[in-house]
Image (cartoon, rainbow, N blue to C red; front, side):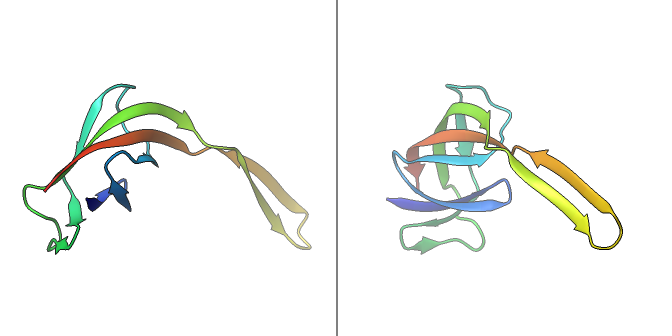
Length: 99
């Protein structure tokens, strides 16, 4: 059973047992989380969401991604600026899709 749900401004296509990285949630490891904004389950499409549908998941860990360097440069102005960024994430495992 496949489902598409929305969280953190992004959409994810999942099946039961998948492990995905999503935007950071205010949950700790081993907590249960339910996503109610389900856009599609198999062939059933919502307008915009399917009423009564949900995706249940368990938080595995919270963390931060690899560091990226952001470099700003303006030619002929002697302007250079370097920044670093690490995007926070939450790793969740999909347990059940309720349709």
